[in-house]
Image 1 (cartoon, rainbow, N blue to C red):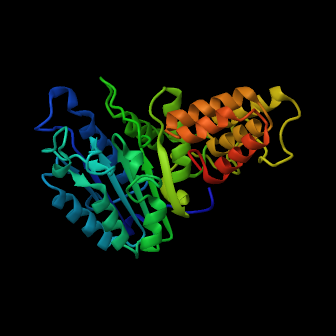
Image 2 (cartoon, rainbow, N blue to C red; image 1 turned 180 degrees about the vertical axis):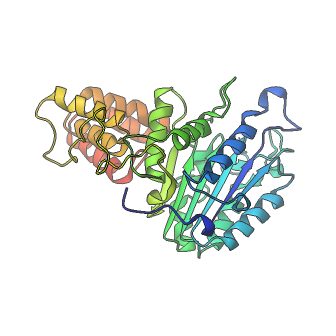
Image 3 (cartoon, rainbow, N blue to C red; image 1 turned 60 degrees about the vertical axis):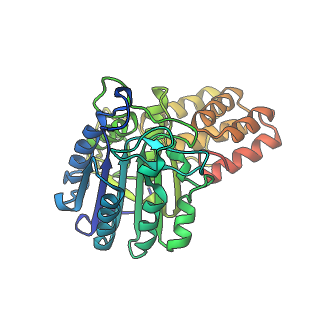
Amino acid sequence: MTGALLPEPAASRAVLVGVSQYTEMPANRQLPAVENNLQGLSSLLRDPRIWGLAKEHCVVLHQPESADVVITALRTAAQEATAALLFYYAGHGLIDPLIDEELYLALPGSREPAGTHLALRYRHVRAELQRAAVVPQKAVLLDCCWSGKVLKGGTAMGADDLAAVAAVNGTAVLTACASTAKALSPAGEHYTAFTGALAQTLDQGLPEGPREFDVGTLHQILQHRLGGQNRPLPQLGTSGSGSDIVLARNVAWRDKRKTADVHTAPAQPALTVTGLPSTVGGTKRLLQDLLRSGRYKEAYELRLRLAEAGDTDVTRDLVAELRREGSYRSAAELERAAAGSEAAQHLLRQLRQGGPGDP
């Protein structure tokens, strides 16, 4: 956390879009959990403990009949917001490599294959965010296949490009998976995988986490939870202070200055270049403690430093994690470099500067 505060609810807007039934797709392509996503997420965002958006400021579009319905709702929300704007989509993500490599958000009448002309182009969503230059904080959550394509490096503009055009203070795009991966809606589960992990985090909080959840912290929490279940790993693209955009209060947070809890583990010291435990076992225990306490950013930093120091087990884990994220180039380069070598250290420094993913 950098001290950022939860955006004022009265000055913020959210547009939640979801498609659970597709008239032109077979039964095995229907997504009944998406309707639950919309109901659950809107309820959480309106909860005063979490954000406290007014019902009229949290627009829910289930089964929107056209792209115009979505864009009109987003444009209205962008015109009204002066603090923060959140756009969420859950449903099928479509691509058509014969035309381009852009992401399309499937609508109820969309079909597969060659049905992107019946879907909403993500670039039209992006354009509305660019027009809303007066809104200082904008966040996009995409729970669909191939959603990582909207981040920097894909054909469509990512968060960095969005900020450059709109000249905003902070922008964040959090996607359910990498550009080459499919999102997941597990059979029999109430929510889709990504939204389910997000809803659990917002609803239950994290006792040892920060007072408020910014996008960067949420990304780390979701990566840890979903990665532990061998599910697609979410991706994050940010610009400016985008990773510091706060989306929710941590309902499980306790002020340790006022509350003594004998069950709470002692706080770990801040990580510094010389602050590692002197033994390998001690360092591994510190890593486990950081993960258990929800300090995922620090845990990721520690893993990178262990890999820089030549820890082959940690390096192997990082290679596997990069592949799960879709960062195949970085994974291959790290795997080729000898553990602890100058080439490996150079790549790991790049990852540390840019966060998980290809530098």
